[in-house]
Image 1 (cartoon, one colour):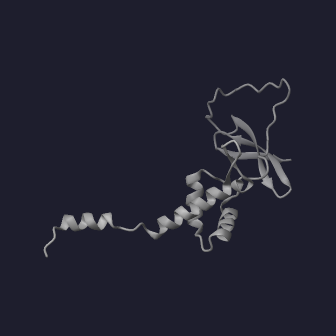
Image 2 (cartoon, helix red, strand yellow):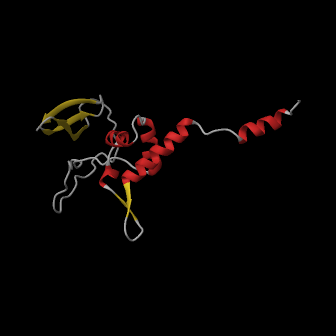
Image 3 (tube, helix red, strand yellow):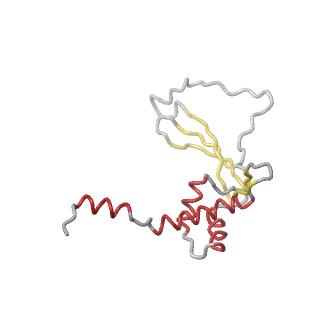
Length: 154
């Protein structure tokens, strides 16, 4: 019996099953949502302590509920729900301005060029992270040759 191609394609698309990954992702997303959020008595939703998990801990927790859940599915679910792990520790504050401190004037007027060596020097300092904390390093740079001519670490 002859059937038009577009009729067959329309029938095929209407009877198509969703992909296995789509079903698995939906299951994982529901598991992540139920683990990360709990409804309160007043009807609002509260994030649980598990909602602060990173991708590794969340994957381990979801695999206890759904054995064989893929890490990629957990990553996609966390991204969809807007979840990200919390990082411990504070950022190091390296420069703390003094009380009523004044900054040094701009003697070069932001013109970092020189006609000859040893005419214009610029000083800068930075910090380097080491095992024991930080080491502060001061540099003196010759503007003409653009090289460090002196430094000191404290």
